[in-house]
Each structure stands twice: as C-alpha cells, then as structure tokens.
Length: 320
Image: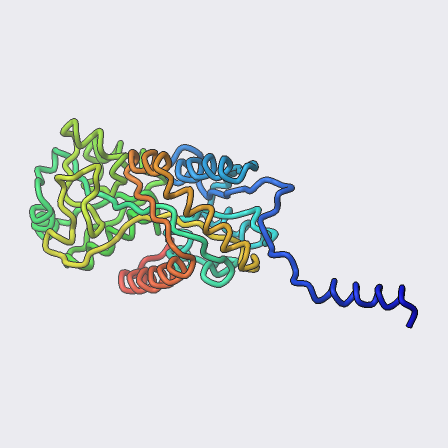
C-alpha cells in the first residue's frame, strides 16, 4: 500500500474510533420554559425567577412562554412533542403532572412521555374560613362540619386546593361540598362575602386577609409549618398524623431528550435553585426551593400519581 494511502487509512481509523463529543444544550437558540397558566401567578413567578438566573449562568437567552388552558395540559402536550434537545422544558404543576391523568384523557402519559429534571418549589395550602363563620380552630371546623353540611372552595377541579380538601374530608370523616372556581381570586372574594364557608388557599394569597382579621387560618396542609404563617399549626399536628397535601411545581423535559442533556439541565437548574438571591425571591412568596436529583423527582411523581389516583377513585371525583 502506498505510504499516502496508508496514512489516510490510519487517519480514518483514528477518526471513527475517537469518542463522540458529549451532547450538550444547543447554543444556537434560546431555552424556552413553558408554563401552562397565565402570567402573574406563583407558577409563572417561579419560572421567571429561575429563567432570569439561568440565562445569567449560561450566557444565553432563556424565555418563559405562557400557554394557559386545560389545567396546564396544553403547554404540557406541547413540551411532550417538542424537539428533545433541551431547548424546550416545562414547569409543570402537581395537577398537570400527577392529578389530571386520572381525571381526563390526555394525549400523553406524563410519567412516560416526559423526563424529570428537578423539583422546582414546594408549598402547602392553608385552610381558611371567613371570620363570620365563628370557627377558630380545626377542631371547631370539623365539629361544625358534622353538625351541618359546609362547602369549601378551590381554584378548580383537580387542583391542589381541591385535592387537599378531598383528602381532608376523607381523613376527618366529613363530607363538605366542593365548589370549584376558575382561580383563587374569585374564591377569595366569595369567601370574604360569606358565599362559601372555607378555602384551601395559597399562604401568600391569604396572608393579607389573615392579618386583617377577615379570614381565620385553621391549619396548613404540609408536614411542616410554613415560614409565612409560623403560628398556624399543620393538619398533621392537629390530630391527623402524616397528613401531607402540598402544592409543588417541577421541571420536566421531552421524553426522548438525551441523558447527557437531561443531566446538564438538572445541574444548571439545581445550581439556580441553590442561589441565595433566587431562594430569597421564592421564599418571600411562601415558595420553598427544592433542588434534587432527576431520579428522586421521578420516584416522587410516581408516588404522587398513585396516591391521587386512589383519592380520586375513593371520593368519586369527576370533571362533571
């Protein structure tokens, strides 16, 4: 074999034998974080706080796009079918990721067609009643609920506030009637006016009315007390050990996204969630940053999905 041909042959062998470069986030286009609800809420705020810091860390554009509708499913469906290169991710809620699949027919399975990245934030709801109801404690509320049928508001069928109420009905042996609203603002208005007895509200939403004495906070729904309401006991410490019905938002990606890209996204978002400035902005709104491993989020989502499926079946919850 001529020397030149031999060199070409050796070069070709060396080229094909060398390891392929590790896949990374694309640098030639922005990263887009999809949100399934309108701008202005806690989910949107979380996405924008993370996006701002992520853009600084990566040195590239990170945008937040709101695609509201169907309890977050419109945005979630879009991400499930998006190009799996890490440029499109989803900040999903407890509802869209683990509750809605048991209430409606979806075009995809969140546990199979999306890949976990990391938990974003976690926060409890707070059971509040109007001051005119004359209830001061959770024990009083249960006693009144057993004497007469009460109702409770939520921000919609299948929402975290709805499911917390159903779980509490089950654990307390009461049967208060669910009244769904299209959002928390109208639920608060009707609660203040006495048109509904109770509401499982986000602490940041209810806090001004609790401070003014218009609403009475009976208990929060997480295992630990929230910093926004340190004097309000949890349901768990009020006679229902283990009661845990928190709201949470998690970052996920299209299901076929390469593992190296998923791992890079996890590292970068976890870094953001551990940044003191980001933590301060989120905790001021009653949102607890929860950075974690991808596997940990995947296991948690599967557990949550199974738990809410059981509650939905036992409480005979439907969209009608």
